[in-house]
Length: 178
Image 1 (cartoon, helix red, strand yellow):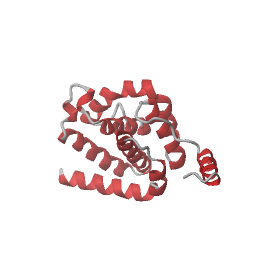
Image 2 (tube, rainbow, N blue to C red):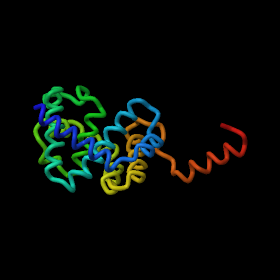
Image 3 (cartoon, rainbow, N blue to C red):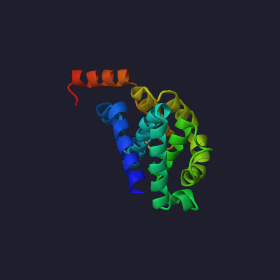
Image 4 (cartoon, rainbow, N blue to C red):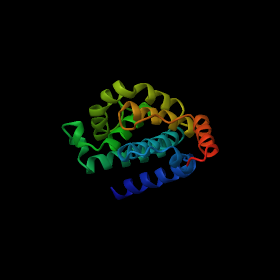
């Protein structure tokens, strides 16, 4: 079990270093605490999906580590959605959509996905599909991720377009407001 955890963790860190822009991530993060947890978890799913698409061995290491974590926490035996932390559940749902693995993932991962998938797809499936289509573009991905968070009532507003944000910042500076 320790080796599975170590391999999965090492691969996840390597993927984050390769595919993640921390400054962009922080700049576009939501303010709401639960939304921030989900935002971070789904960003991790994005970088893991990018690596999994290219490196099958890495995909297996990360999938095994996720499965072990879900089993260890008892989420594979949960009888209802509320027993699973939202960020963990949405990370699994996003990963399954990004990698198209909902039907082939290990048992605990499948169980968590089964408990949450329909509800998430019903409320925010369009945003989830848009995220899946732009995994390699973090800037575009975070725009759809913020819309996803809003659709799930986790965040008050989706991410503004950067151009609109820049214009409003210039207007604030020009009028002396901060």
